[in-house]
Length: 294
Image (cartoon, rainbow, N blue to C red; front, side, top):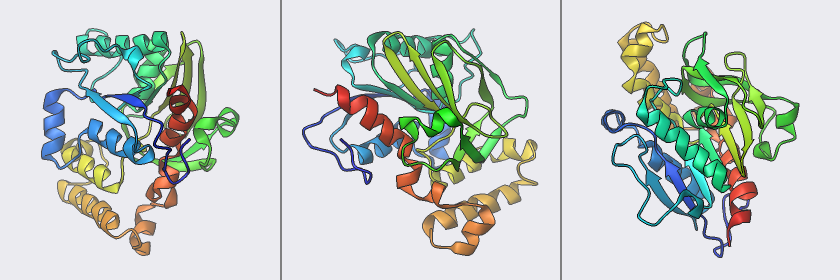
């Protein structure tokens, strides 16, 4: 089993499918802004937690996306879903339908799934729940005071996590209706469902609306990439102000001991500590993936 620091026994070799849902133009746009590809972020995070793991990446929004010949989703020990720029309640989008069917196939096969942002929405919709636009608009940057409810405090997904914490976030949509087999574990004042577990068919999905795979640098690059839209929505007073905030995030990333800057930005250990920030994916690997490795 994985240790808290991330070491693992070499005899375990989980094979994990990472589904990067970003369409190619959006992947290219984010890369041009200096952001790491979502699939690569996941491989980096999960690979540090479980160095023996093998990964395949599927760009499920691409028309030519497919698993390798002869490989079925049931061949994997786990399926991990990155964020995505699509809108899951757009039922006219063939790409969305393709994603939902992949999640349902994993449910049917009994492969444990984990996902962030888009992932929690996939978890809900694929099992019969509903996702809609959050009437409060976009939750961006740092989601404050995500708090575990009684179910979350006792759930293995949150072993080693504080009862209340902050998380990196960027989303418009939220889960509004739970599927059969769904249970909410955490939320905050902005988003009622920040963590969800779903049991459907033979499978289990642990999903988060926030992004443990992000760090200050990735969040800064995302804000830079979307600075005009964020300024129009009132997050920044001007593009100059947006660039100042981006620069402040990057300075703290480069110098995590800058106490004054951390205080000014409201960034605490729950965001800076990998051990705390990565508790959820670590627990998913420990509790759902590694027990299935033969």
